[in-house]
Structure formats: C-alpha cells, structure tokens
Picture 1 (cartoon, helix red, strand yellow):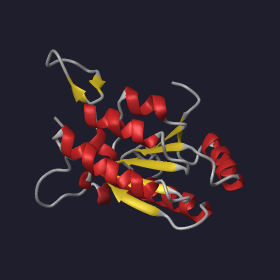
Picture 2 (cartoon, helix red, strand yellow):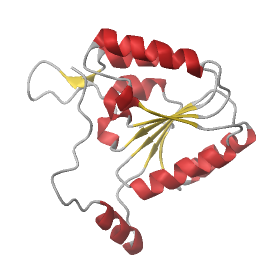
Picture 3 (cartoon, helix red, strand yellow):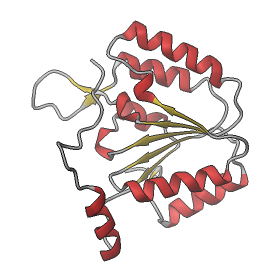
Length: 184
C-alpha cells in the first residue's frame, strides 16, 4: 500500500485535513471508502466545513447508466455545469463507477468500464477539489485508485461503542445491502 491510503482519524488523516484547511480550493481527488457510514459522514462534514463556497453534492446513480452513449451525454451536461463552480464537489454513490470482472469467473481483478474511463477523463477537467464517496472499500478498482490523491478508509470499528453503532447501522429489515448495479 502506498502513502495515499490511510485510515480515518489516523495521524496521516489529521495531517491531510490540516493541509486541506490551509488550501481548500486546491485541486485534489479525495476518496472516502469504507463500511463505517457514521465516520464517513462525519469526515465528509469536516471537509465541507473547511471548503469555501457552496458544496455541490451529486449522486452518480443519476448519471452513470449501463448504456455508454447515454452516460456520455449525461456526463457532458453535468460537467459543463460543474466547470463554472469553484467549490467542493462531492460525488455520492460512487459504486456506480465500479469496474467489472472480465475473463474467467474466478477473476479477482476489476477493470474500468468505458463509462468509468469517460468519467475519469471528465473529472480531470475540473479545477476544484472533488470527493468520491464509496460505501465499501472493496468496490474500488485500480483506475480510481490511480487518479486519487488520497484514499481514506473507514474500516469496521474496533472500540466497543463504535461496534454498537456499526452493528445497528448494518441491520436490514427486508433484503440485503448490495451496492448499486455495476454498469455493463
């Protein structure tokens, strides 16, 4: 693992947050990834408090579809609007970008979809800092890891009180907690 991977509330995280405070408008791509939603939400609020201007939240599930041309059109319209912003942009439900397993059924390597590659290309056109929020660290693929300046992990908690909150947040009544459908 490289220096850009670190856990929430670690020394590296606190150093990165201090750097973000000093220059919140600097171009960065920040990944928040992990199962512990409460800490992920709190970390997101920390970045929002430090950012200048309005925060723009975007749900990628509204823009990334299984059809390439439809996705490209939606992303073109979205990024034309985003180019005029000079504030923190938060992409939620980033699981929509999940790569796909190809080849053999036992493959453990995910490859970027055309939709994901196009999103990354458009993302590089933006000037303000960007946060991509993944609900599960295992949904990341190498293409997303390469473009990220930092990847902040939110692992399953270790303290007793955090374990209680985590257990409550994982409780589901009807069904399961599957990530968003991956594009084809």
